[in-house]
Image 1 (cartoon, each protein chain N blue to C red):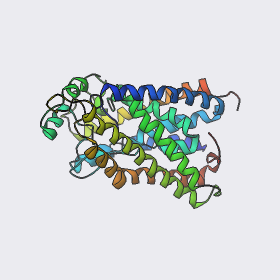
Image 2 (image 1 turned 180 degrees about the horizontal axis):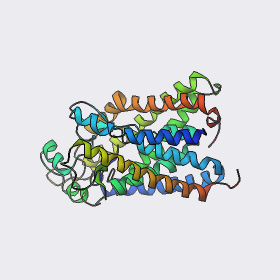
Image 3 (image 1 turned 90 degrees about the horizontal axis):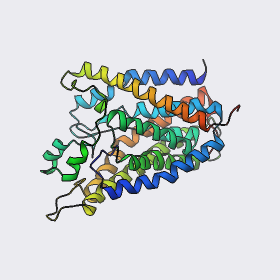
Image 4 (image 1 turned 120 degrees about the vertical axis):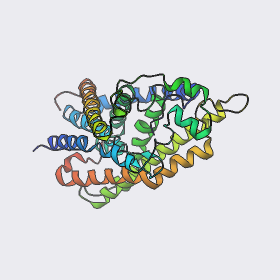
Length: 226
Length: 111
């Protein structure tokens, strides 16, 4: 889901940079109000976890690869705004240092994976785990469902961003200038592989982590938190 | 052991295991992620390289492209796995330092 340079035209790349500015601003303002000094190490662990889990590429034999993002877990533990900052940092380091995700696409990649994914995941978790005791199995299930839905919504959105490019930018003869696949190919491809495979990886990783924390550190599983 | 210590140990274990994410896709002959093809792969897929995509694809010269060292591409999986682990250590160290710094700036003191 790391869109490289050259796949999105200037309109789309620019739009998502502009869209992310108020989101990043709001994130730092809100986290400033809510983050306690003792939570800072957990924030760093959340970013590190997201970084390393994205390195576990899962193959579709003979086809493509993909991976979990680990962002829904950060959102459950730290709130979606703090998760947004943590995933943004991981994505920026991946783009600058390792060329994983384009420089021009940082806005779009952050919108998909650092904004939509943790927010969708967080609210799904809140809804499904509503009123469940801290040690309830429903919280584990909620985490899995949240991971699955969060990454799939983000993947669909990435598919839409890819798929809009041939409509927006093409030569007179109809050759694409950026991503050559339209909506009818890009959205089913991105949605399909995440619904079938990578979504389950995110679901299992998120659910297992919550299960572990229920046993080891239930105090990290707050009901509230913004 | 404090829970944060346990979680850091967990991250370290994941870093050491990370080459699994390199070796297994290689074993199953899985290609690039969807929408993350290089220009030459694009030529094979659609028969041409979109003009602007070709120009922009080399916009950024990452110091460790694809979590490997430049020039190590042909060295084989053991070397690539080592480079992958080194990449993970470097990337995560920088991410964590940035995150601690940002967290320090944002967090309320003494709580």
